[in-house]
Image (tube, rainbow, N blue to C red; front, side):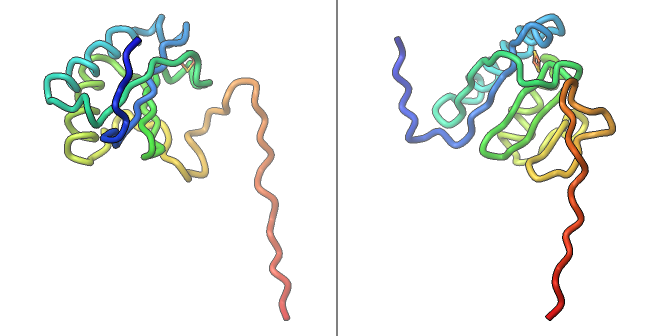
Length: 128
Ligand code: FES
């Protein structure tokens, strides 16, 4: 079993390879992303982990970048390589594939299947 030195890791990418993302080509985007990381010598500072379902199958393949809190949708090999070059390399998210950024109030107008979230309650600030 490999033991990775984590002291230089600056980003952790979660690469969804659940069944729905796999059916949409997650394996190819996973390979492309990891190849690009290796080709650019970023292996020491970027860690990747393949995951099972992350709950956004309709948007898959999904890639999550932490600690940036950024979720990417519709990953394909070209998009995966752009994430490495543009986001990880230059600090510019690949906007066309951004699904969600941590702190956003909404992803889009489609609900997460099976999840019902009530609207936020009105907050009344007492006046003194
Ligand atoms: S299988 Fe990837 S989000 Fe569900």
